[in-house]
Length: 327
Image (tube, rainbow, N blue to C red; front, side, top):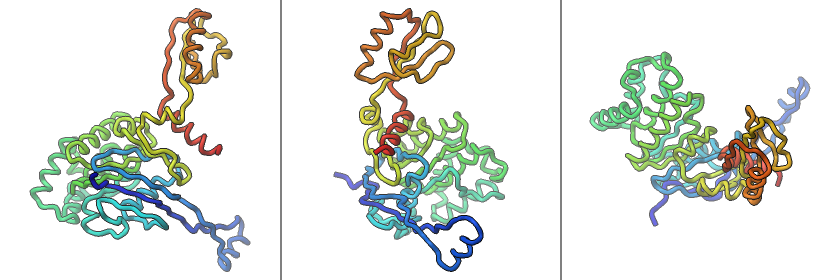
């Protein structure tokens, strides 16, 4: 059995957070007697990612995703538990470890704002002690994949958000890392640019057999890149398995969209109405009842068009989180 790229066991991160009421009196009291409370950002998470695997790391805001990535990349020390990335303890921050990983955060800048992009690239070449020959070859590869040639001589402040994110991704990969921690890499980008970055990540994974742990609120990113997902909620592991298994575990419904010859019609007796749009009515129906309801609709009504669909991944994940909250 090959050694996994990422192994996490019982990982926890707890913060001691100051607490005080509003108003001047509470502010003065806090100077003398500071009150705090413990907040668990990550609670006993365990999972393994094999070399070359691309895994979606999903959860709502505040679920502990970014905190986990920061611990795995060595920026934070865990309160308890163990993490191993490429055979290293991340928080020891050994040079050999740092030279093989990268952390790309969609809301953080690595490029220097006032200088040309190519100068920031050269700075990273020096930091990682990349040979000029390897640097040129990697830069040529990245420029070809991301279409960077026209951007390299521009100051970063003159780039659009999409152009800047392409350059941010490229500068993070100049040292050809074996493990990519991608935290919302497509946030704020238009659909076309999101698609280009997804294609690039897939190509990089294929070309260099890199391991990718991806967080994103855009499910199109995850569906395009990841066969496996890890769901976290309230700092705890909720699901770890194939993306295709999510529906089987968390969704007991299907969607039936009906277009009636007479336009709008009352379909409350067939299922839960979840939407109407220009004469098309969408029903939510239990999977076990789908065949029976479909047969009734076709035999009892003058149906112009009818489609049956699985719930979207977005809806399934939302249902998973709702179920966890209710427990």
